[in-house]
Length: 277
Ligand SMILES: CC(C)(COP(=O)(O)OP(=O)(O)OC[C@H]1O[C@@H](n2cnc3c(N)ncnc32)[C@H](O)[C@@H]1OP(=O)(O)O)[C@@H](O)C(=O)NCCC(=O)NCCS
View 1 (tube, rainbow, N blue to C red):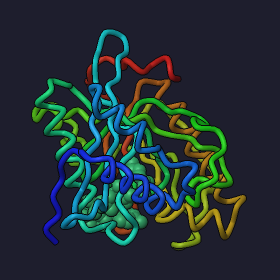
View 2: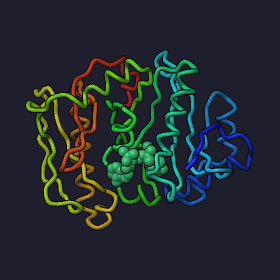
View 3: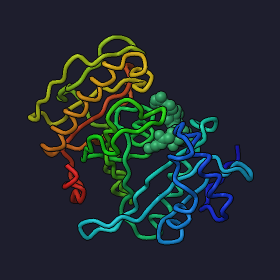
View 4: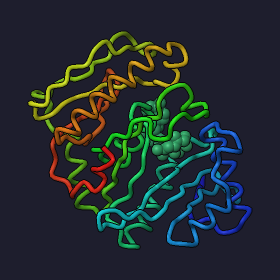
């Protein structure tokens, strides 16, 4: 598939990006960011990229300029790929172009939020891209009604993607650390797809800590709403405690039993989002 990525330019292309949002998130038209807002952002320092399969827009990313504590950075508010085009490498192509443009414009990192226990997004952000997270935003958007977010608090990681090659290499090296001494905070019980979280053991003396996440918490919470909420509560308490103690989520490890976060203390640029909590 010869998909190309470039900034959107005509009103009809921006309108097509509204359709991509509805398809990617399963949201209604009212919840989509309207084309007028996307055009305003694109023409005033932001960046709205589209992924094109021939003439058709099949993916997009909406990026604003952020400013905080004397640092100017890119903030990626939405990245979405139309449902039937997902898991074909298009999301990665979009982020690669977003990184290329951001580097060219002189930004040190791109930030965005995502739900840390949705394995697909965690995998995409940590394993494919190499983000880190050290800020946890409980119920960030309040209640949402789309098919992914309905029915529980919209907790988010605020992740940072340090896009300069040297910094990115440093982050990537954490995925290769030996884990013998790591403390296991959350270990999933049962067999996929019905895996449960019985308890969580916070211990901030260890050098590194590991946190399991289910393969598909969105489907799990549909079948077992209480267990879904328990995953939210357990991981939320864990990430808040470790981030407050100076750890960051530095990698997502893929083993035979699934995905687990690696939390560690790392030498990173100052945390300009610290007041988020
Ligand atoms: C997140 C999103 C933008 C990624 O785009 P994409 O085109 O699917 O991304 P890619 O194909 O480049 O990469 C997806 C990776 O996730 C993997 N993946 C897919 N489903 C997964 C799952 N349930 N668990 C773990 N990994 C999963 C794919 O195998 C692929 O990895 P691989 O290339 O190593 O095989 C897209 O899935 C999307 O639009 N999702 C809904 C909207 C959303 O949640 N956006 C927020 C993003 S932070």
